Length: 151
Image 1: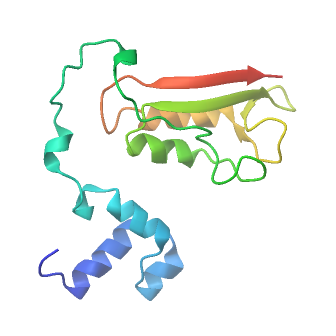
Image 2 (image 1 turned 135 degrees about the vertical axis):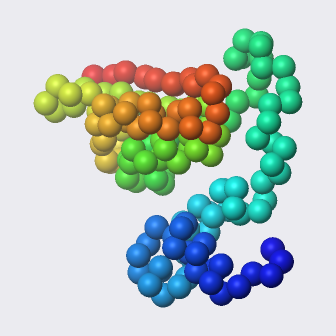
């Protein structure tokens, strides 16, 4: 990136760094760096990739699709946290297939989590609301919800 100034770097930090402590120190942590590199401002994106240059009239199964397994998990499949913002993150990264593992919750309200493990649980309705909000921001292509339901 030619002619980068300190002020420009601070703008990047303030825009992409989620940790307020890192912002105060004027540093970009791994999450901020990842956010920056995944954005058009990160200078790694070829602007031509935003235009569709292939036949998109075929059935969905005819295409390579970016998909996400255990979309809701922040880490390992046994004890990590489940978070709805993981759906927003993968959808904004271009995934068109996300996984929703739906279970009966204690109070009868459906939850999403990796069954029979110590992973945390999130509300199904929060997952669906997040998917609805972010599914078509980056593109208009169809979305596949890989779901399973257990009780």
